[in-house]
Length: 151
Image (tube, rainbow, N blue to C red; front, side):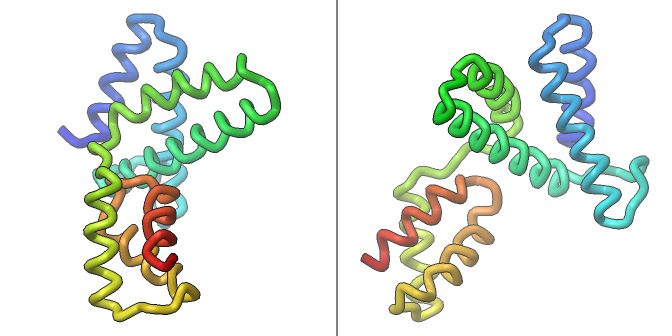
């Protein structure tokens, strides 16, 4: 069963359970699938691969984290709570995240492979590491690790 099929089944479960947070979150994921397919020049009825599903879920997780930080900065803790609940639903479909130590190992190896010594090239290293970890690490954490290698 693909990730998209699993999410569609969980949507049905959320409807039966009348779980509004899960229902809204999973509907946004399915809507994201459709948008991603259309953006790729496909029809909404085409199959959603696990790669597309992970891309959409990762984007939605990032959006939720950004919203949480903005709501908290704006003093709207009530809105941040809903976003945190939706984030918890989304994170259930994310692969286990890499530890900072594991990211550092990959970054050090990539830095040596690419022979980078100048801090102005940190963007190249960040991109290479992000490609390597592919959805298993948060981009902000990867950037922090890469930046620490050039200090």
